[in-house]
Image (cartoon, rainbow, N blue to C red; front, side, top):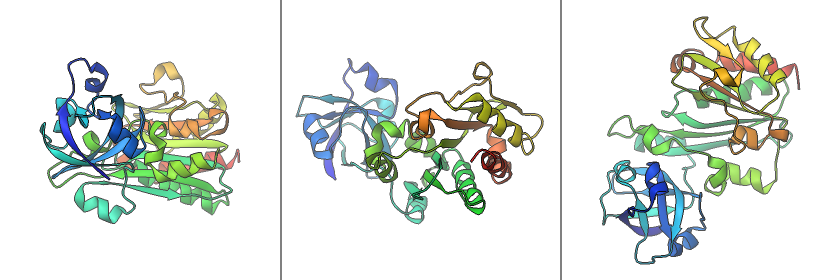
Length: 290
């Protein structure tokens, strides 16, 4: 842990100001935290905590930490405030994170796992997506198929529904050393036959995207059409999806062999109502190819 004084982003730091979760660290603090550009850090203020992405490392040693006005508003900071920075973002225990409106990590790792289940936006961020991933883990286990589950659970604070603005973690693979589970997988140089993730999107369809081959995505789409209400189209054509999940730095793609990751993006209502039947259908599809 290191202490830092908060400052405004400079007028020329357009990249820092572009996203509310971005910051700039002094070279001294970056060294103390073991961080470089695109690394993730945990910030603790007097009232709220949040994660930040190090967009820049600046040479001015007189300024510790810079972020935009929106970045400061995430946790109610003002220029001149004293904060604490840590190199690891999540807590270990959901029971500790929930009442504080914090974030926790769950990592269930089986050495012979064939499937990597990644749910970085669980808790109150994208409600039930972590439950869906954990239920898939259990369903596969019941079929004799080992898997690995990694998830984050970010919670509302007592001040309101603020989990998304503080804990919607962007591209955790790029800041993997801030997440113990991902760090272990990277140190093991681990890869899996398939990766899969569950997410919520603001769209009226379910997208089965990711970088996996069309055949496996179609197989999963066919299987989940059963539990998905008929008013929601299930799509596999990238051009018809709002969010395609095609980035190589997305965790379900990154840890899959040949980037064979599958991302299921769904309307909020589907995640809220089908949090067991949909992953059951995913498990049924995966069992036939594993």
